[in-house]
Length: 256
Ligand SMILES: C[S@@+](CC[C@H](N)C(=O)[O-])C[C@H]1O[C@@H](n2cnc3c(N)ncnc32)[C@H](O)[C@@H]1O
Image: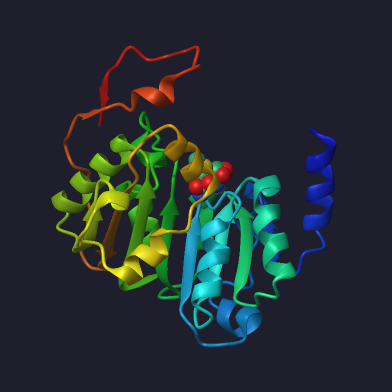
């Protein structure tokens, strides 16, 4: 591990806005702040918004500045990335920001029923070969339902045609209400100004994909608590650019 990373990890231990639960030690250890984020940490009754796979937390920090009346929590397993957002939030005295370092697969252990209003998924790994690890897959939707309010909002911003097409199919198959959907948000004239402002925040990965000339896609949909979700039966062309430099490339050209 690089020296810079070690220094960041050490500094993160001192950050008052970071909670670290990286391993499955949490299996039998209840997270005491579950159901108490507003009371114990934010000290207000404002809505809670999560950014899952937040990386450096650009959305978490910038949305927190735009919406001081909402609370934001960035979640990722990579501490060195999260350090950047957590440090910035402290420097800017943003009391409506927190970061949680854990595996998102355990996410429902950290939030109680109806504790969260919105989820942002920013440039998530498309997980083309494993639907159970895909953050818009029904396995994750089932987890989100355990803590998201009824008809809570899910935002997906992505470069990935695979992830976007899959999510469109999942949403359609399960009749989830779609509020906004665009396959090229920077050239879509139908996007209203307040949405444009939200979507103008750019993450590290977004900048990288924009430089490579990819269209950025965005979808906002609602997740009702009622009803059982099932996987759509669709074959989706894989994103070819994501396979560059990979030694063990699958021969498959589509996936479910
Ligand atoms: C492609 S990066 C995007 C990061 C950031 N949102 C951005 O746009 O720059 C995906 C992020 O999701 C995180 N991630 C993926 N799966 C995860 C999981 N199961 N638990 C926690 N973090 C995860 C990775 O560590 C990584 O930082």
